[in-house]
Amino acid sequence: MSEPNHVTLPPNVRCAVSPRLAALVFFILVALFIPAKVYDQAIFEALNSLHTPITDRLWFTLTSLGDGLVLGIILGAFLVKDPRVTALGLLLLVLSTVILHLIKVLYPALRPAAVLDEVHVVGPLLRSGSFPSGHASSATAAGLAIIAYSASSTTRWTVGTLLVLMSASRIFVGAHWPSDVIAGMALSTGLFAVIQVYPWPRWKPAVPEKPRFDSRPFRWLLVLEAAAALFTLFVYSTLYSSTTCITAAAAICVLAALLYGWLRRLPIP
Image 1 (cartoon, one colour):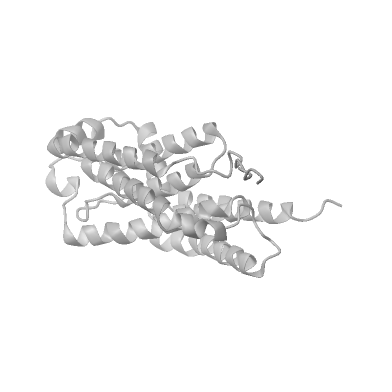
Image 2 (cartoon, rainbow, N blue to C red; image 1 turned 90 degrees about the vertical axis):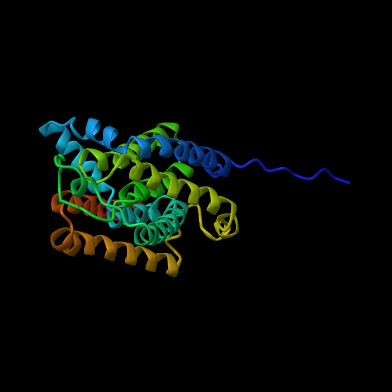
């Protein structure tokens, strides 16, 4: 009887973040949440007081990129690179957003600006719906999906650093308590660990590793992604976003990435 063939998958096919690793990070965040909740005000005041015109612009840019729709179209742009990132990322983003808003309804909490006499606010003044942080949850969901299927350790560390900074920016712009941020990150991290056990292993084989431009359903997905980016550029950035320039710039970059990916499929004359 012949020996069974054991196929070793190349590094870019494996998920770089195992359920065990995600669960470990989740429990670390839960452990950090307890002291953060106890010393919320002291930590917030210490960090929120560290501001200059330059850092304000930096934190405002990072917090603007944590918008759910902006992150959604960025994940959609991975259709032309690695559709698995798009599928896993949007699944995480949608589920975490639904759970997060349910928590906000069941556990209404005031933001720092509604509690403290002096808060350094950059951007819109928000007073309610503090717990947990939607931006931190969305940034973590998108970041984990990108990290999961990145073959480059440099990319993984860069994206990981960005998701932490985007989450932390909510404290520096005066929108959230530290415990809100940690809770938002923990929510998406825990959800990622669960999804990696079920149902992602069952759904993953149906998601191609590379774009299939010859597939009609795939082309329709590209059309929907382009439409979402155009909506973000011409409607959302001007009517609903508090950061028109940053949101519009993100949408333009996404459209450029889609066009580049589409043009690469064409034969070079």
